[in-house]
Structures are given as C-alpha cells and as structure tokens.
Image (cartoon, rainbow, N blue to C red; front, side, top):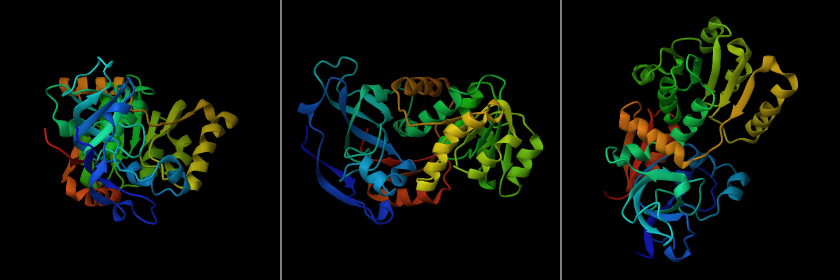
Length: 338
C-alpha cells in the first residue's frame, strides 16, 4: 500500500474553511502496521459533506480542541477496504463499505484514504450506488436518531427544514414509521418534500410559519428542528402536545447557542412544561443504523437525495455551496474510482 496520498488539509483558521484549504499530493497515509483489531483503512470512492465540516473547525477554541491540526474535512464516505488487522474476519480486502467517521481529524474523507472502524460502517449492498451510499452518512444517522427514537405510528410530526441533508432523510424515515408529516421549506423545495412523503408543506417564503403552526394548535407529538431556530423552540408550547418531544438537530456553533442548548436540556425538567421532553441529537454513526438504512434503500422505501456532485479538485467550491444553505439533500465529492 502506498505511503502517501492526495488530500485537502487545513491548519489554524482565521476565516472560512474553504479559503484555508491546501491541496497536497503527498500527505502521509494511515499506517497498516498500526491498525487495531477493529480498524480498517478505506480508499475513498465518494465523500459527502455536512455543515459540521466547516462549522466545527471555525468554532474557535472549541474546534481547535476537538480537531487536531493539520486536518482534512469530511466524515461521510463510500469506499474500498485496502487494509485491516489480521484478526478482523468481519470484512475482506476489496469489500466496499459505507459509513461515517465519529469526528473530524487527520483522516477526513475528502482525502484519498481514511481510517475508521467496523462499528461505524457496514458492507455496501450490491444494488446501491457508491454516490448514494456516501450520501447516507452523518445526515441519515442523525435523522434516524431524531425519528426512530421518538416517533411512533400515527404520530403527527413537524419537521422544521425538510429539504436539506438531514431533513430529506427525516421525512422518509417518518413515513416509514407511519407518521403524519408536516414540513417547512422554501418555495423551490415544496415539490421535493411532497415527493419524499410530507403530507403538508409550509412554504415559509409565502406563509407566516408561526402563524400556521399556531393555527394547528397543540397537535404535534414530535417537533424536529433541523435549522436551529430559537423561535421554533421558544414557541413550542403553542403547537407541541403535552407529553410531546422537541428534538433539536441543527445548531449554530456559537457560544450563546451552546449555552442556550444546555439550558434547554435542564429547563423543561425544572419547570416541567406539561411533561414536554427535549432531546438534542448527538452524532452517532453506528453500524447498525447504516445496515438498516441500507436495507430500506434496497427495498425502495427510502432514497438518497443528491443536490450536486463535485470533482475532487473542487472541494473548496463544494464547501462554499454547502455554506450558502440552499441545497436539496446532499453534496457529494468524487474522490476515487470504483
């Protein structure tokens, strides 16, 4: 196996991540001799981007503590196993796998090779395209936790932000669970959200979102916020049932919002807001989530939504587009060849 690889790297940031990325053709590869029993080295075919790829590195001291530099962006991928520990019998060299890294670091997935474990990926079903598999990743496992752990058949669910990476998966998972789904999105994304399974769509460009939600009354069993809107949370008592659950997914990486988030997790317990629960979805790219999502894809129950595919040379442009926040589903990067 080669000792060097091509990748995109960054060090200390004083601005936007895409402005500080440096392309290199000779970065060190993960070392096969250092692998633990569960670790594998994957040659990346396709990577997918998430907002956390730029939000966390740009979050000041928090990002500097959590991500050792130099680092490479990217958590999500589909690729080929090129090295494993001799005692690992769960996968073979040459197998295609898809999954998501547990966090940012040196072996980000827009690099030619990444280091991961079998607890954070699964074997790629033969009928799933690598681009679609890469688009599962962190967005789908986050949506999986936000829906599968809180929504039951017959529930009425409001999803704030239905057209992005997490939202497109959340709509489909809620449909799998047999829920009645109300979604917010912009005019350009109404048709997509309906195609994915939304029963009602609130076009926030044309309607007063909170006026519409207030008109529903306290009918929602679960509210899933993929945007990070303080208004959606602050007004939850107008439309979330007693006994319901507010699920927070999207979060700005600011000190004020992090403090607000911490208060949210304890405040409902103190005030007991009609037994309404609050849950913040933490990243967990578990193998069993990928297995279930992959099976639903094979069965035709859910599908990946890809906004645009970029060549590897255009990673900075892909990040810039993601930052603008107008994507339908996922942005993927062609890193290697099948």
